[in-house]
Image 1 (tube, rainbow, N blue to C red):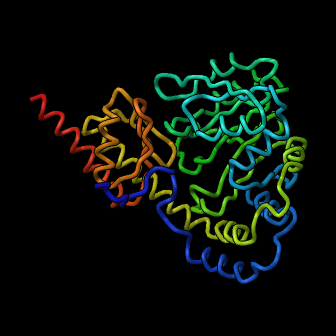
Image 2 (cartoon, rainbow, N blue to C red):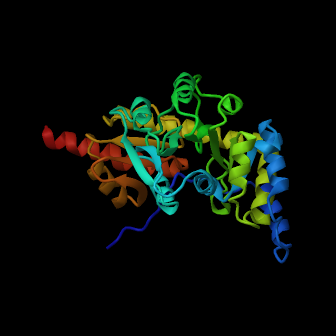
Image 3 (tube, one colour):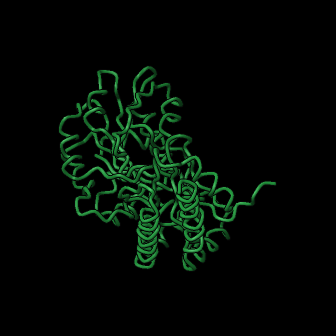
Length: 339
């Protein structure tokens, strides 16, 4: 008999529902659901721009960060062009490349789970229109440091757009974290991609944004679906930004649980490298396939990459305790069997 899913830790979602003030704003917007939203999300764009401290001409809004990424590819890629990215990574990148008729150029991760920036640069050729960096990286949680990013941007040809996916940046605590928006003026071929799905807990509402040079953003906006951002989502984002201090406490809680979960798994013998997202990555040669089975038996839904690793979204304390019980218990059973 199948074990029911008790803890949903596979999609890097927030364990917290929207704040009460955000839900109130959503309910108010629902009352006007018979009215169209703005043809283009100008009000939301200006709100995000003011919040980020950049001109509104440097902000593109879309249906989640993946929607903005697709708008970018539609703007700059032609059939037969190439999109380069590290692999393994976010599953959407090859799908988006296929949607615009591009060829994918996956570059293996370094053995420590970092993106191999030298190998990515070597993969860039005359047909490469976009090269993707994901930092913090999905699924390993590794970080592209400020110095590494600056060096990479200096070497990428101007004809190639660098898509820096920072969907998890709010969870990063590293002192070498890049200040990516400050690089936009010097690198007009850079688009910084962010989302309200993770740290802001609005995954179902699908709002993401990109920060880039005015010229690049204008090209991306031309690919935007009219009426594409609904009024409920807009209200939720605006209310979330007003409640940013409360949401920051939630993010701090997730980071604290990430460190607890990773620390206890490491103490039990799992190989846990430092991670900067809202997840913990367990990689082979750890017994990841056995670990996935133990988690499933415990009712924990995790993201299992057979033979490669397990990505564990950081949940609430109860969910994280269930993970520890399953995986620490597996290690103890394996140790006992060898005794």
